[in-house]
Length: 234
Image (tube, rainbow, N blue to C red):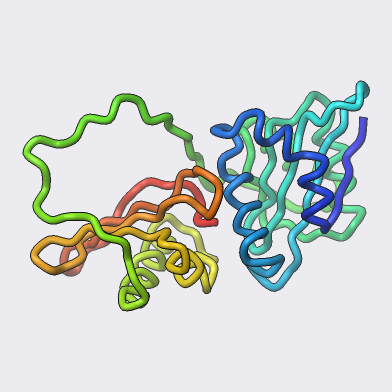
């Protein structure tokens, strides 16, 4: 039973893709991030190269995976029993700098405790989130005025300002990656809702090949803030 760490996306996919895709809803953020890295390269999320890893059980099965795309926290799947301490040791041993960890609550607590013992760093809970499954879709009646349309490069500045405001409101100090709007515009991955000729809300669709949750941002009222729910913007 051991962790394997690598900066090779191909090696990570060869080892862990089957595990991640076995539960695509639970692992939606990991799969979305992988597709973004495949499409935009290793610098998609920042200047520091991403790090990948997987846990192989005593029977040789892959039962956990990690993804770290600085400046974001390290992202973990569910951790098998007694794997948090070896993971902290492996990451500390390779000199990885971690701003935080995103994981199931008990797994995050175990990893943070192990990391603190090794590095002397302190930790605190900064955010809780939940993944919701869409059940029966009930269109509003009557429907809102306006219609949806695919965003174009003419909408770049508006979309960048919305995403930046959204990141600030939810306390995500890093904000969205600098070129995320251009990348999603390139394949029609951003949609606007326009009423009376004015864009009043927007949402991102899927990365090129992976269904995933993503930002959905209403236009804020004058002097107000936009609020919406989504997964991290990757």
